[in-house]
Image (tube, rainbow over all chains, first blue to last red; front, side):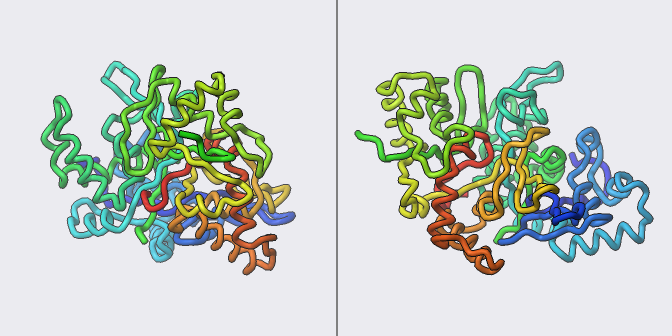
Length: 212
Length: 199
């Protein structure tokens, strides 16, 4: 079942860090998209691109949409927020996807792919069941996620699109013990995937790119 | 079999780690999890932080890092070569193997150093892992966007020419710098190698 909220906002591209020049402060964040880095200028644009990754304590409870982005940006007036988001959308630096719009969802899943950062730390038993750690070997996990989200994180980099990753996960779940019907239904996995992404994006465990 | 060389490179990305075994994804293959000793040798094949650029990372270096005698390490390395998880490389002439490899970043770009904007920083979590020059930064950050590491280094050499700061040796020079830096960068978890065309 989808998280409550509106159309999801996803940052697109690989964070390459702040650009400094001699004797000056940061000019903005460089984001790798296509074959070169793009400068997202400091101020509302860079803040919005950062905020589109989500906040770790919220992204499992609410859909990361414009209202969440506005909350993180300190109550940026709605017209300003819409202008900033429109600019990032125009530049291909964010994607906005309404799970209630099947055609838009399919288009997003077919035209974007996932790359993972960090490393896998394996399963850990917790009171609510098993979780899987993502982080740096030898250090506490940066994020603990459900086994399904972990499976996506570990396998999606090898698959050409998010849609292909969802289909692969649905097909491979058929042989799992105690599997729920929605775990083997490709359409249901595609919808669930829309909410898994921020679970990983919020800690920099990977990034989205447009399929070339 | 004899090992390729003179240097070695580890391919793959560790996505499951347990106390007694590990699963490493090499390209699109999902191998059976390795035992702890095999994983230790594979991890040791990645190199060592601070390793001099261009110096081959040899089976003897792997054995020392893994805490095994060389014959034992070589036996494991031979199996890893058979699985495609280790390849040989001559850092002085990396072009042949570079056409079979793709480089993926695993750490986050932290941007340029405010005190020295020619230096790019990389980190994981709160730990800064490396400071690299602009040319190498372009390889680390962007190489996965080209079909293979050799093509990526040629493109990065083009960036440098466009910027008016050509690299000695052009694409071959960038490639020698990139491949020669891999034992230091892979060991830090900054990057991993995968077979070209499989990611």
